Length: 421
Image 1 (cartoon, rainbow, N blue to C red):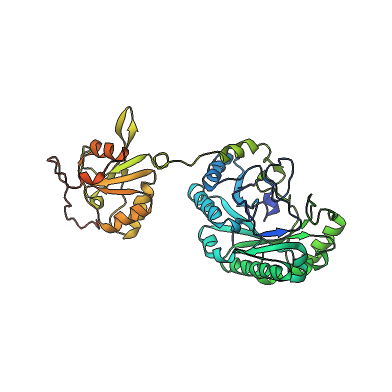
Image 2: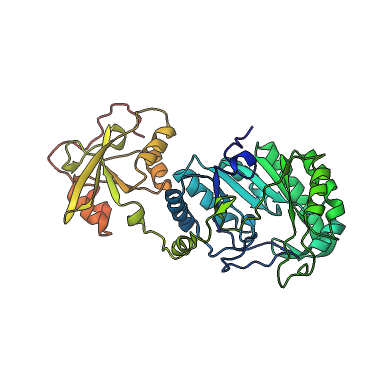
């Protein structure tokens, strides 16, 4: 059973003490709902699809860092638009990867219409996304055809019952597949007067059969310039009986605030307006260069003067960087213990994650390839450390150091059987 104690949307008791952040990294959408009019620049509306800015993954990671500095009550990082996460799958998955690396203790949450979720079920689970919301407004294509203007599957646009049928098929597969992978699933259903209100208990029944954990019935909030702009917003006299009927099949969420795509803070104390400036500032950030992300170089050296030790024999690595007008050794880091096969090199890559390169007098092909796939340049060289660093930092040819012979210390593998290759 997934932890719901810190998720304010899945646990009403947590809503007063646990907050959430919606990261607006998904601007594109793959369906057109007749109630949806997405605006990105309005700070005064509180409804789904609205955001003051759109972020790239690296900007979202930085924004997350800044938000957590401002509000320690945040327990959930979610993506809910302003379009659909899986119409923007590469950006969304990259954002989740960055968050998992920086903030593994957060709960990760996604909200989607479900159309393009099935191809990404395994990746969702692998990234540790524990809570997913799928919006299902109808389980009858004839009713769905009245709710959706079009559905875009790949490069093909479908309309009417055909489009609604494709969407429904994928939504049901998404809920089923998520539950098979142990993910908590909330089903959102918009109450649309005269369109689906009599059909909602059937949506609840079908969702319950698929294993959904909770349902959120959301009253339509009419938006300008949409086909449903003139429909009335359902009141308590409509919502309460529907929740009672739907509750016969599925537990009901009753404290939804119809959050923006850039919502932040407690459900009852949204701080998106307060943090709007921070969000917009992060949206203007430029990506860091390799040198900024990985400013250091790791060196396998016996005495700190020469590159003269085999990668697999090094018990520790010297970490060098720029400072005081030249290169200097900043610290030493202990190398992973020999053995353990590829796990050793995985641990080494994690140890050196802020290094752009590693220099050693020799290394096996397997560790070299693994380190380079992890973002580290792996150079076999010998000679004075400062000379090699000067060439590396200036973009010179590191191959000139491969065959150098220096008469201080040894640079050959000692054949100690430490798993160098």
